[in-house]
Image 1 (tube, rainbow, N blue to C red):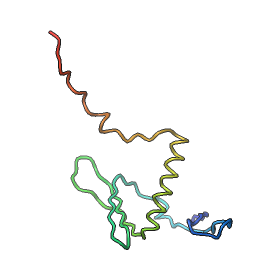
Image 2 (tube, one colour):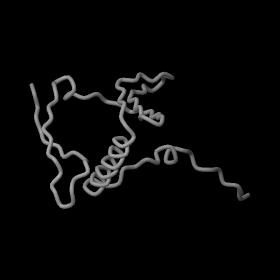
Image 3 (spheres, helix red, strand yellow):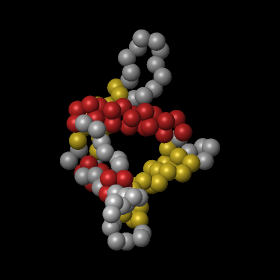
Image 4 (cartoon, one colour):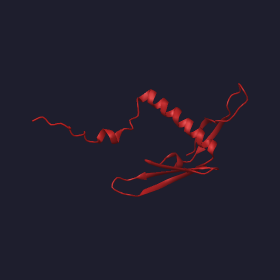
Length: 115
């Protein structure tokens, strides 16, 4: 099945002109997606490399499932698009918690114990 949609490219356009609308297609294997809970990003002057993978509890290894190579300008555009989408998500569904480590730590012992 070929799913089609429209996307707006983040391109420089003359003042006041509409951004170019792009048509894209996605095949079934890509449309199904893959769950990841790990990302590693490295870069050099010419490109960014984003590795996405899965960590399984109780195992020390990470299985990289996808690698994306992109230019610095596209990495910056991805950063901005992700920030905008996270802000919209939080406006709609509420704050995304990221403090799980602190929340699961046991409370510090009382320094003074009454007799």
